[in-house]
Amino acid sequence: MMHLDFEKKESNCLLVKQQNDKFLIGVAAKNCNTVNYEQDFAKIRKYEKYCIHFETGTTPENIYFINQQHEDNCVDIRTPADISLPYFADADAMITGQKGACLVIRTADCVPVLIADTSGKCIGAIHSGWRGTEKNVTAKTISCMCDNYGSKIEDLHAYILPSIGVESYQVDEEVATIFPDSSKKLNDRWHLDLRHAVVKQLLDMGIHRNSIFASPYDTFSSNELFFSHRKGDKGRNLNYITLK
Image (cartoon, rainbow, N blue to C red; front, side, top):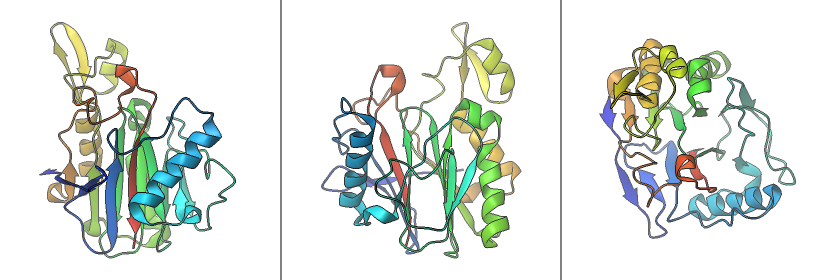
């Protein structure tokens, strides 16, 4: 597994360094996403789209959000987004082969997984909380990319953006037993290394270890930079990938 490095834009948006000219990956986090989360849902989503438009230059009809459910549904996007609607579909993952499309995953501790086909065929974006990870949403999304767009496993790069770290993620024993290889006791409390669980699923799908890039940032302990649900934040980190 490779270390994921960021470079900071003037706006404080964080761009991933390890990417090629076929896609763009970044996260608009606490110091960049200035949306007022006290507004109603429709206004929040409208201004989140403005934020992504400002950072990427992508037009609103090419910016896609999903209504994340903590499930394993993956939607294949082939039509423009209806800008009058707050999200494209009820799902926790999406893929597309549309040039210029920008897929956005909202997180505040869960694991955002962005998949890029380095040949330029398609991209994928995944919201993987512990429930979605239990359902193997990442593996199912990769299978959809291979089935629907002819992606080859050896061409796929996976990017795990900031999420809660194992030291900060205390869970009950019932959840810990679901992930025996990714849970451990710290000070007599069960903790879950959700990133480790996702990496294991990527490796099980055949993604090469050197094609997996993971951020070491913990959204909880680095709360000055990232929104964290467990810290009580209402805001969301906007993790995005654009197919150029």
